Amino acid sequence: MEEVLINLTKTTITSTMLAEAVAQGMKDKKASNIVIMDLRKISQAIADYFVISSANSTTQVDAIRDSVEDAVYKATGEVAQYEEGKQVKEWILMDFGNVVVHIFKNDRRDFYALEELWGDAKMKYVESE
Image (tube, rainbow, N blue to C red; front, side, top):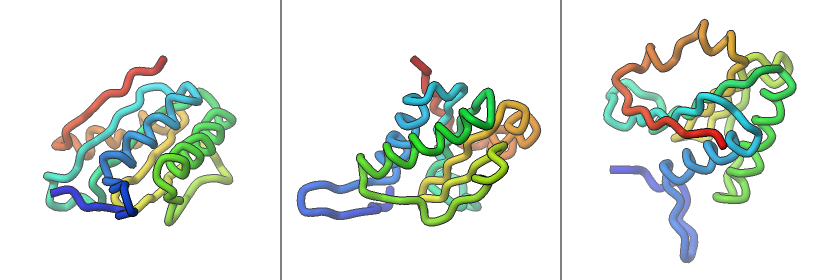
């Protein structure tokens, strides 16, 4: 069963909706190789979802991060509880509780290979426009 993040008067925000908002923010800045990893059936998972994308440069990594922040706030009113990597901009991690966001510069994503590490997760690939 999916945990409800926010229960407003007429709107219930779920971790699935939050993950989709993250992916939209990534698409808005032309992130590549966007994948939503559903970790809900993995017992050791630290979140319901990882949302991962790649960028060609540190400038694009930063732009994607800003877009994710804006998209999530507009869709859910949520802000990241924790953030790491904003100074170096090779890999930015944003923790929204049940959704963890990873924005990688291309070479860093290949090096850390999170999709292989969490290979039991159900993968949803999001097409860029």
